[in-house]
Amino acid sequence: MAEREETEKKKEAESFSIWDLPDVPQKLPPHIEFQRTRVQCNLDAPIHTENVMYSGAYASMGVDNSLQLDHFCNNFRVEVIRLTKDDMEFDLIGIDAAIANAFRRILIAELPTMAIEKVLIANNTSVIQDEVLAHRLGLIPIIVDPRLFEYMSENDTSNEKNTIVFKLHVLCERGGPRLTVKTNELKWLPNGSELPLETKPDSNPSSKPRTYTSFSSSQDLLPEFSNNPIRPMLDITIARLGPGQEIELEAHAVKGIGKTHAKWSPVATAWYRMLPEIVLLEDVEDEDAEKLVKTCPVNVFDIEDIGSGKKRATVARPRACTLCRECLRCGEEWEKRVSIRRVKDHFIFTIESTGALSPETLFTEAVKILEDKCERVITELS
Amino acid sequence: MEHGAFGDQSNATFSLTEEDHTLANAVRCTLNQDPRVTFCGYSIPHPSDARVNIRVQTTGDPAREVLKDSCQELMLMCRHVRSTFAKAVDDFRTSEKVQAMKIDSKE
Image 1 (cartoon, rainbow over the protein chains, first blue to last red):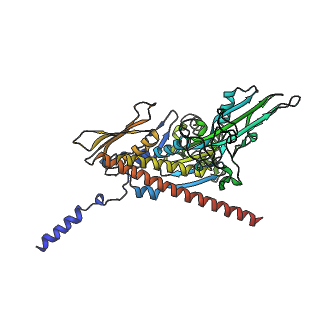
Image 2: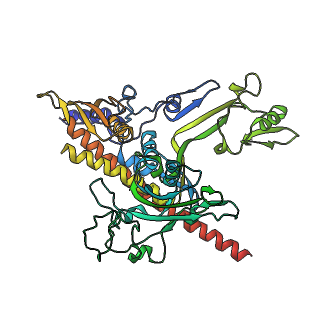
Image 3: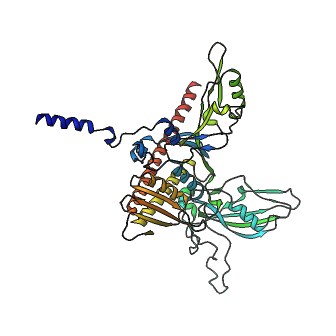
């Protein structure tokens, strides 16, 4: 009886294997791991570009490819490289391309801003046509936090919560020089529109004439605007006037998103690229090393002395590589010596803001919008 | 909107309005990595309609639950991204201040 117990225990000990442990990270053979994590950029085209996401992709080898949230949370890193008032460059490490692309698409098309939508032109004797002038006014970035305003639908009236009103009145004197109209001439009207609507003559003459907007209170009573007037981006040329020409108009700005029209996009642009990884497969020495260092237009390679007068090429700044592949075209057979790769889950993001919101706020808002989309889907499904 | 066979809850196509590649590709990516999913994909029937069809086939669990779980995971990932990003920006700002102070003290 004791013997049987012993043999049973031995069997249990033998049948227990490391595959049974729930979250042991399994190792793939190195060439498969390379296919999974790197894009190999050959001279003619890149290979291994697809993301192997299917959870059972490596099931035959006993490796679990499924997403574990803890694994993601432990490995995900953000490193900020440059952060100024208008642009920032940062690295997202450990995230998938689909999600990085979702952030980029939201930054460009789905973050709201304020932009001029309706232009009421009282007088325009310049050479710029009305519609061209209105188009140019629409593209001017307006430096205000769009989160303080609400969207305006077609049935709403323009009030102080959804409209910003600007006025432009410029006259070029006869006998004077030509005038360049810049955005500095756009004046903010915190009390709303000043152009009166045409009302019937029998209405009460002593009441205030109705205008194109109905502001119930002045916008500069709000604490955000009291010392900080709303203004458009300065020093942008709107039009040029010759002597005797005049422009008098009122512009109403509303909230919108980039999907409707690009004027509502809060970023000049936002883009990402994958981290380049350059590997020298063989030692490159002496004259070849000099040749290699000279061919690279962005100085990725450097020479180091290894004693006894011999020189060797090393990779000094792989991050600067622009994938021009000049090093592969250096001479014959150079493709076997230099390997240009990209790391599939390391994204170098650059965001350039137009000025309304700072770039780190833009990114945070974009992530919030993706969360809201997911929540909307979940509530629809429940 | 879910289109599936009456008896079989594990295979279904979900038609979402007002969505496009932004959400669909991200959801498909997290769905694919769920071990209960045998097949998943999305298609956009016509680019002028803002409509996305997401197809989910699972190993027995109801497709609706699996899709909800994936969306939930995507939300949690987004929250983690936001908090990590905020911390990284703060660290960068403090390190810049420290560097500026070091330069001042050297001068």
